[in-house]
Amino acid sequence: MYIENTIIIEGLDGAGTTTQARLIGEKFQKEGREVFLTHEPTDNPIGKVVRQVLQKKISTTPEALALLFSSDRDDHLYNEEYGILRQVKENRIVISDRYFYSSIAYQGVQCDMGFVENINSRFPHPRYLIFIDTLPSVCMDRIERRGSEKEIFEKQDFLSRVRTGYLKQLENLPEGVKLLIVNGEKSIEEIEEEIWLWLKENGF
Image (tube, rainbow, N blue to C red; front, side):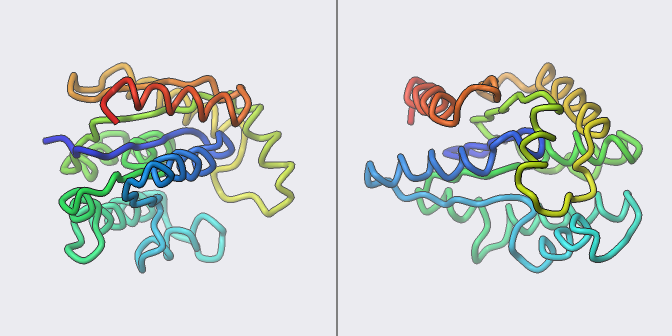
């Protein structure tokens, strides 16, 4: 099974995934298309607990955090009131800033990879996956410029291992997934245009 009409944007912290998800959503809306713009962790109850862990407000084990991410994702996807599958059924274009690829890349650094893959194995791949590939050093420079307190994963050596985890996943995607890898060191406008042209070439 693949999730149709759904675009996932992935990348390291500081890669610009949130910005690009918003910009692409705005482009579709200007065309009069209905868009469901979302992100993981979500703003739903389980996602809020995840964010508290990321912001160092509460502490837990890496395995418990991985399970929280997976639980939030299950609700994000399957909730009958607001989940992604409902949005797809109602003919909205779903754009999500992160999905299970993030869990495998990030939680796979601290937890047993088999454990992380197993708790995310029930989630279907999307048809459209975009990876904004940005060097960890560049990401850290951007994070530093924000001036806000760093989250638990925002360390250069950690992000280097996360990037390796992402790239391994991208080498082993099922044939049904259409993949675009974008150079994250391009300007925001250049990345936006590259993503938009690729989406149009692939049926959007």
